[in-house]
Length: 398
Image 1 (cartoon, helix red, strand yellow):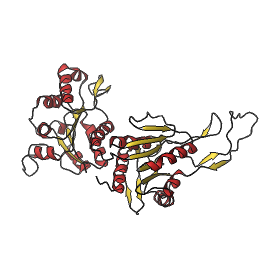
Image 2: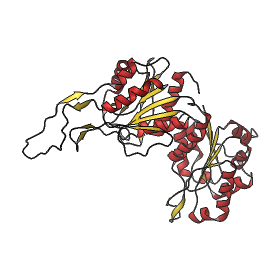
Image 3: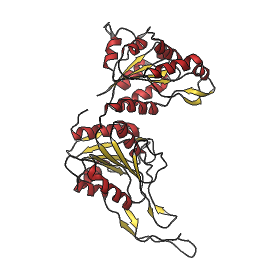
Image 4: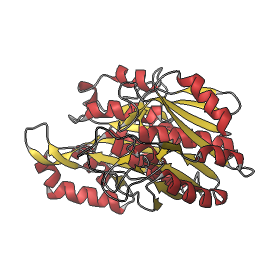
């Protein structure tokens, strides 16, 4: 399990660090928090302790009087994240100052460091701050943000701390260089297929493709070669990922079945249509002179079932089940019928979850009968949890 140390300073954006700690913890990281004295005026240490399950470090001496806490934290960390990173801590880092627990830990650690600047617009624009950030980058410190937007001082412009989800993405990208999926070719499907009725209309569904894209992005950052077979979405293509665009269930069938035999993992996150019109009009169907329109539908070919039947030795197959009731029972049946190794099931009617949402609340079901219920979390976090389980199924360890 990777350990992340979050350094929280006394900027107004300290409240965002609470959500950041939650997201890292939900993603399976062991999170320890260091708070400066000024940070404790913004957010209570008890909040971080409740979220992470670990005591919050606030001074050079741990609870009970144990010395050298900064050395322990520095050595245990796989990544140190400073968020918010005020102009003060940025200056300390650039000039090697160590006058409190956080700055001392930053000076002692050999782990990668990620800072998320957050400050007033003029402070960020000041030549000293710019020079300090440039010096940190030169030394290999990773910097995410700041973003432009409304600031606590009432002004608007650069200086706003990046959102926790963006910081998590940057952290995953840094940790991904450890290569947990290096040498693996994975195939991910995404989006909702469209079955044409005529050149204008189609039968579709509400899938946004966000879950499939999150899986592709995180796999790439972990070192995998990723092929994303995607039905239409409004999302940008993930960088460094081979994208194969399809529209219909039949097109997805052809592309997936041609590529799956060459992949170590296949993840069917797409919402593939179950039915397609028997006849497709070559011209737009007019409503004039019609009392109604009857469509005869045919079932589409079941891609997941075909993959489960022809799965090669050592390959891991992951399916998805979007349900509106009877979640676990229906998911168990689907897992058994399709021959998948892992099924990710979610109730699309649950508040804040499902189609087109930023978050998802899922149940992971395994072919050996295990079941893992997960809390509501950003889809990027869920993607990481899924890859953790896939790696375990492959026997690669962590």
